Image (cartoon, rainbow, N blue to C red; front, side):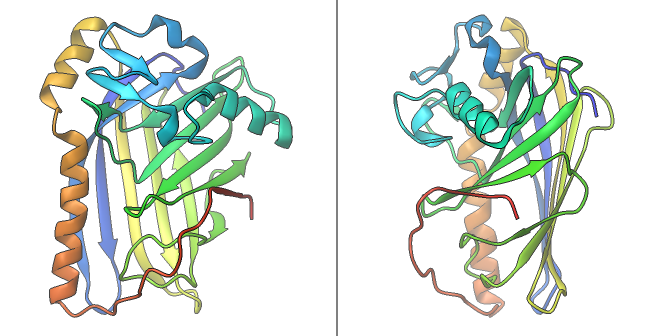
Length: 250
């Protein structure tokens, strides 16, 4: 699967579908940046790494979540540990708009010298500030992971994910997540379909102006759906404990 390695912008069309007891469905559009972490010096003036700007990606919000450790260093350390041979790393994420961001999931895409996908690191966050990573080494269809972090108050912890990634063309990224309970019954589905356009100074600034409330919109929609499920009397699972950043291979 080949992905264009250039800095890019795009809107991800996101679907969430609950498939048991109190069924629920919603979809929304979210603004995404795809950055080549090996080429951060070529970003336009209004986009910064680890600095406040119109659009920012802060080290404290990703990777090691340490202010002084770059995301490229984080990705490179991981590659060394798990023997991932790569030429560059692309990060797909919702950026901070004027300092604010919420990213339910971000993707570190390891590409070879032909821009072919060789590994993926999924970075997952919840609204409590927890973060975990799931690493997929050369397996991108129905890759199974044990659920290792509390995400929704309406889904239990004893679950598994099956994650599939598709790249239909070099400017499109798709991810499908199916969640199963302990009896292997599907209980939840989520997907993102992201169409990417090469970043320029002009289209990037227009992207910023048109999506200033993009990150805020995502977290508001998530809480609205939670309120809906509460009034539908969905089973509630209490948040148990905060976890430290961990990485899982499964």
